[in-house]
Length: 606
Image: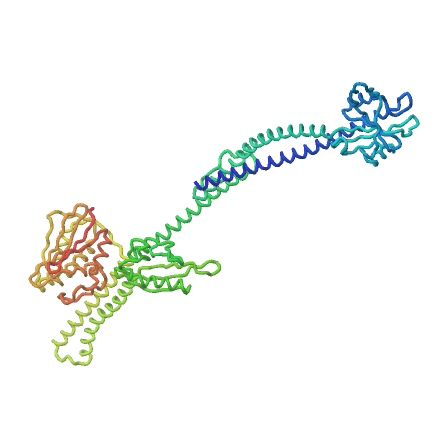
């Protein structure tokens, strides 16, 4: 509404300026025309009187007696023809001869002669300078006030010359200026009518011209306002073929180019958004007023907030974010990069690195902070340390046993053959243990590096399960655990590698025997699971705690050493998982503390 009122105000101002200009021009032209016309009429009247005075002067020497004054009747004729009063000037420059209307005589009186004139002294009517110039032979015009006539008149005087060219007198024509003024009034009235009509036409033309001028400007203004509001595709139609039209075409061209620029900027923004949203690290940018400029989804996931406003706003658990917000505040205040490690609500370790944002002059505009979850890195680092420690420990144990037997043999401390044989058996046992440990480590390394290739071939599982059970029967009997095989009675055809399947089964059986108390049972099973064939080992042992379920597949991880019958390397389940995946299957575990555990792996069907 405000913009529409502004547009109407512009149109009204333009119309008013056009009308004012037209009125001023018309009034000025009328005033000049009236002044010039009045002067022209007056000059024309003076020139006409001078011309008539000269002609009367030329005919005034025709009197029979040689006088300069014709008969009074002739003078009357001159006055009627010229419309002016006729005066004669005597050559002595002292008196003038003027016609006079005589009244009708009274009873008993005589009428005066109609041809007689009345002579009046010059000083009483016309100044001597005017009379002197006429008697000097000049044609003279002037505007004077006659005292006896009580009016302003236009005077035109001409000398009367004889045949020899000598001045014998003069003729003066006097015409009241009122006749000129009446003609001027008539002209003024006509000019007023013309001015009124001209102003009316000027107003109509100004309105039309204003409409033609303002409408394109209003369209251009509306288009510019819509572009200001974000409608960059706005176009201005029906533009005139003038400078305003060129402005409109330029605005249309600018709008098109602006659309292209904005389109490209949006593409670049979308690409940047995709890049920022796609990175795994959290990113947040904050200005000097603590307004969030940008925050990606990874940031919200790492700080475990629903929105960036929750991170910066006042909440009940806002104290959790205080270390991170303090980091951003320090970065804004000192303009230097800041780093810290912070723990979120899920106790994940987050590494935060903040950098100040500056403009070209070096003024600080805000800060950007990059957050990275280093929990896995820390866990892997801890795992590496544990791996080195476990390897050192596992290698040291058999080596210590071997050394403990070799040194007495070298020193000759073993006196009897039975003692020496016992030492040899211990050395052999520790050597086998050491060899198994090194073999498991090599297998683990090769499996992880992808250097082991498994050739899959069709086979039937029942025979492999029986072979695995037979190989572990002696250990089961020694532990007092019942080892059985259970199948669904079908062929259980699958794709796999016999040696690798045996390796997985032996690892699972050995693990089950280690955690099953004497009198318990271990079952090696297999069944058709529809899309694949499932096989595994079930025991009635102590089970696995929930906190350990996710970690048992890690290298060297041992759930509870106090409940294990034997000590292992902690690599078996890791190797089983890698081997199963190498054959295109998967492995899982189900367990409840005190109710045993069930390990199941799958194999593809042929």
